[in-house]
Length: 207
Image 1: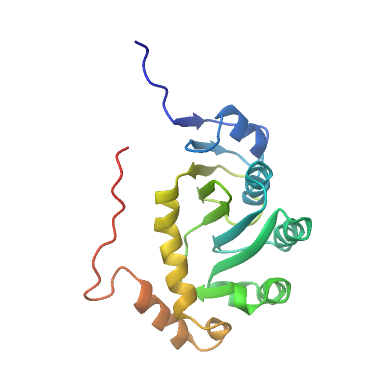
Image 2 (image 1 turned 60 degrees about the horizontal axis):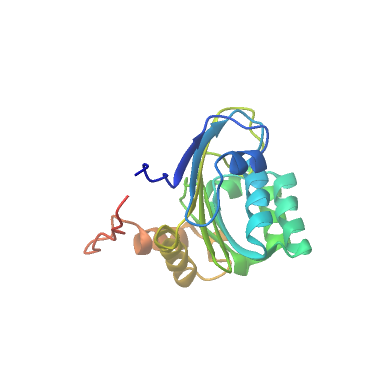
């Protein structure tokens, strides 16, 4: 009896995001891990994923973003590849790149954006029959450097990430994060793992 095939694949490099997923034979129940050195970006990977899943909702957490990459996400919406977006952005984005922050608000609206102290880079893609977590070291901009990518289709893993986004969006009112720091501090106290009395949330699944 042959050894069972792993549902995981490691890809050292690829010429494109689509090639990365193809090499890993990525699909439902599959995981693709690996590196690149600038051949493709976070938004390239998003595009390659939604081309496979079909129309999907997107939740995106990023420390910074570039105007061209935000425009591409907006184009996904226009094409119907993405049905809606939610954004988690770091508070420093407002000060570091105020023009791009204003563009983000104009393109997607305050209802779709929440602001906190966040360095996590991930995307959640939900489509019929698909629950995808894209976990990466890359921000939503082009980087000619080594970045890591983990693309995991797993409903349980998705639910664990989705819970954080839901808590942030439920607690912080639209636009509040662009105002006083108190709103961000209150959000961090509400959803942070350091909150007194909060029980650890662990997804137990055999790997």
